[in-house]
Length: 455
Image (cartoon, rainbow, N blue to C red; front, side):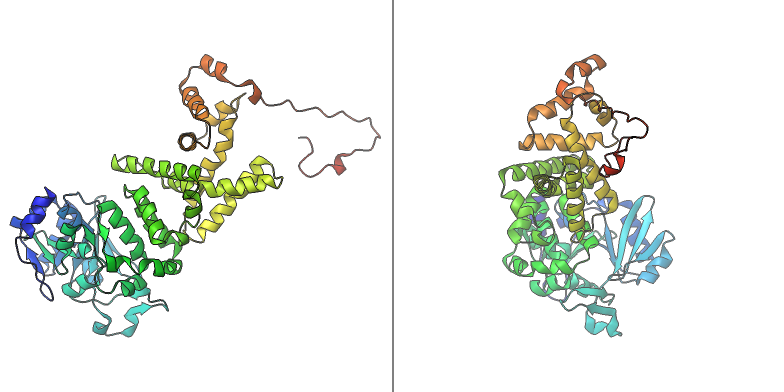
């Protein structure tokens, strides 16, 4: 079906230069009914007020590939203030790029004004870059053609007009879709310097859409990978989350390694994936995530990052135990170290890091299968996440499969069966009672180390 649509498209002429190739409905077959009601309403309202308005970017790309877009962006010649006046439920956001979020019920459409070049600005402060070339502010407005040129990849520079049902293509994006290639608009090195996150986006799009990164687009990436260190950690986290929840996380992570982009994000990835145990664990976690995403099941970012960072925690944990630190204090210390170091590279929100620590801290408790401890663990609010994490460890060979099988049976067993399953060696030891001293005898409590007195 996709080949048939693209074949029809290419029977027409694609213009280069200032004029776009305008592809009619009869050749691409994308009807306005396939556009979300909110995006249709936004474009219609803007056009009714004599503004240009097009669905743009990834939504058009996905429609051309026969996919259902997950979200919609609209591009217009109206300024953010003019857009804001037309929609009661809207707000202007952003400092680097000022855009408008328009709400229709629970659906949100992002509306941006056509971007222009610096030479079109009447105020040199409107577009500001740092010493590496990364744009800090870019609110220079321009024409649709300039906006298309300012977009990152050709496949993202497609415009769809719901009223005429036409696709406008300035840079041969449809041709690149046909060739299954991802190509940067303009000079790739300069464009990566403007926004280093484009390198991560290239990895995500190539893996999730099955596109090959075009040679000139790929060539500068390894040499510019260090520029990711200049990107705010919160923005890196958002882009990594998109990458890992793309439904092709395994391919994306391997692509990150091949392009040398993981060092500023997950620097231990090389070490982990070079170890058979670590590679099996991470790839099992990524396959699990991809499977859930592709079946439209919910995915926990906390669980995913707990899996990606687990072997860093495990390494630090073993190192501390080797120095004589008791098991649980060593684990908690290792968790804190890893989260603190990682937060300097990816700003993992506290709500996720808290859940990650709970998943990690439960792992030693799964080995305690005697007495009342298994019952208490079943009551833990994050038990299911901890149990699923244990199964990944069993699948990779880190923990004996019998442990996972025991917990699978135990949680669904009846009371008598659970009692029979308990392991005797897991019974808690009785605390030895201290002998009471006679009045007048010197107490040795003051000589006990802190925390060793009875309670």
